[in-house]
Image 1 (cartoon, rainbow, N blue to C red):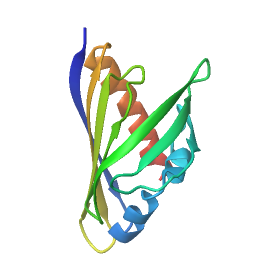
Image 2 (image 1 turned 30 degrees about the horizontal axis):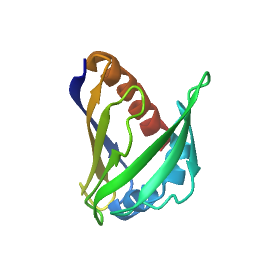
Image 3 (image 1 turned 45 degrees about the vertical axis):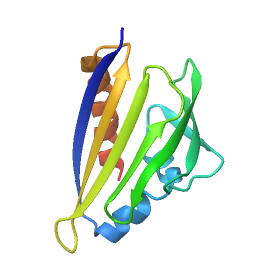
Length: 139
């Protein structure tokens, strides 16, 4: 059985959009702001439409590969990635990153994750909430 769900997380950052956008254009920065699971970039870390980024996720007791393909990229507005192959606990994953400038010094970043999983959405959303909240704290 597959469950479908959508998770949305808003992050208000006290940096201009140019700074925030630039930070998120390298998956190496994702490594620096993600405590769990630990992430290692395998190959290119460039975020661009048509680009595939290969990651290794370390959950402590097991490691798994995660290949993201960037389906959309529009400078200082949006980029979107999907997983190329299913990776537990996800059967599918589409992550849309939206950016908007609230002022010269503030940027609103909205993450929208659409997923399918054998686990109920409540569990997936709880895990994503913890991960995104921790990332926000580290930015």
